[in-house]
Amino acid sequence: MHYHRKILSIMGSPRKEGNTDLLLSRIMEGVKKAGGYGEIIYLIEKKIKDCDGCHACWKGNDCSKNDDMNEIYQKINESDVIIFGTPVYWYGPTALIKAFLDRFVYYNCPENRRKINGKSAIIVIPFEDDDISTVAPLVEMFEKSLKYLEIPLIEKLIVSGVSKKGDVLKFEGIMKKALIIGDKIVR
Image (cartoon, rainbow, N blue to C red; front, side):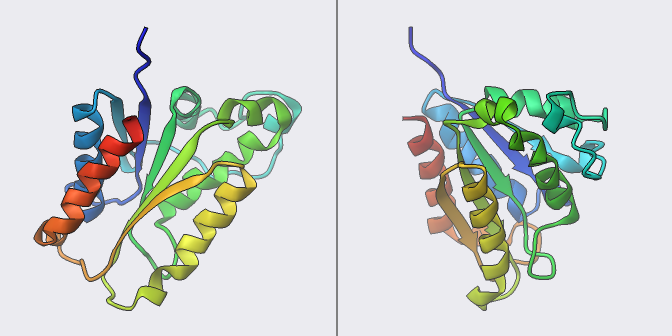
């Protein structure tokens, strides 16, 4: 039986059909063409409460927050690759992505850590500035967080100089690269 790889994209921009969304959609196009299964979760449509460090999850219990994250945990557990998409807001991620990532504390206890073993991650970051150092703190946040969770970061799609909706479409090479990334992670 041929196993279809599952790719979960997390759309962390509050702006639909903007540059982050376009990049994630293009990667997913590549995933589907290669015979993989892909889904994009729009965080703006989800109710995700802030982690308050109650540590219920560390005691082997379900998260006490009882929000949409419980359904997303299931999707994360079933996926092979997680793609985090966010523009740069004040040298960091959007509040949507930060709240989402904060809830990964759930994967800190040994029982739950097993649920994410063997997964890999990709980050997709479009941003307005032309200065590449602007993205460095955000990239480092992802690198350190993913390393701590023992999730290899296999690809970074970082696009500078895009601010208006759809700007990223002007970069044919980038859009082609997004398609190739989707294809590559399935094969």
